[in-house]
Length: 442
Image 1 (tube, rainbow, N blue to C red):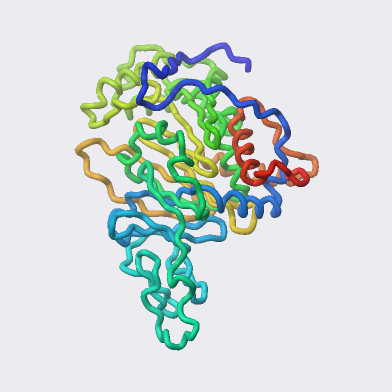
Image 2: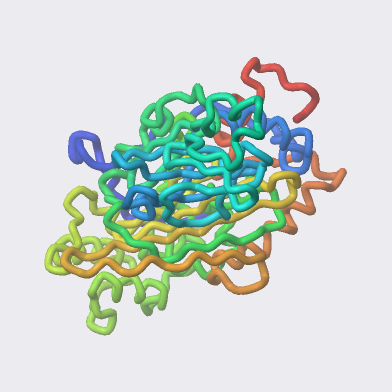
């Protein structure tokens, strides 16, 4: 990389911050440099393998725990062809069930949030209690065979961590804590549970779900798709770490890219960072190259009086983007004061389409009233803006998807800055081909 300027970064050593987010560089895994076949993004056959061997085996993000505060509160979420009901029980636990009546297959609830004392099918009024048991079959005497086996909905593994609820379609899935490890130690110091909903949208994108995961797994594309971000962050100085199935990069914010000339005036995007921290850019007398560290010092000093507890975060976390991917489909831009979370969901039948969920949360300062929950919105790409940066990705990814169908494109030619993509596909391979045998090039 031809760059002459590096941002001053002091990475945290374990002995300096033993209980906080690990910030030291992990040794890179040796994953080779083979082409990643394009068929993984375009083939219906591979999408079927993914469904059978990946989506039905892993833990999946279902929703936010604070949407399920009371018994009977539920989240109805969809993944591929399946619809899942996640329900708060009377004892405070959460349980998950297929969202389908065992009589004739009608959905019990539409996708979204709600509260119910019981779940009654609109079609024939078969009724289920909060634990999934059938509690009423109208005209039961006309069913000589009795109720369906077990007289209850099957139960999916379900659990909570980090202010979120998780479920799996796999009855034999490993414990949630084991699956997420080591993400708990990384993310717990941010206390996402102290952050309130700021945005909740679902957008239909014309690309494979993996193309979206890829786009949020590297900053190599900033120079191409997001050139304005070069006046906001340093895309040449990202630290990449792989943790088995999961991964992250650390990107310096409140600075400028080494790909652009150091400006004499404060760029507007960095001014915004300063204002959010409580600083007045007009009174700042330092150099642009000093702003990142000065913002860190200011937030460390003034956070408590603003009702913001940064005591568990290291200095870099007060400015920088700690970006995580929780395999297979959760992407988090994690900051001291907010989190931008993305959930990429596969289309039920078409590998060229997906659902893109944008969940944004913002820290509620101590003593301030918790805001009302934002309303969920669902629309197709192009119907409305989702913000400049995300619009840029949304505009680009359909052309990527179309290009992957070309006979002239055998697959992804991945470089070192895209190590997370290669690690992502290594994990996909481990699930889709657990015996190590891969038929053809899929």
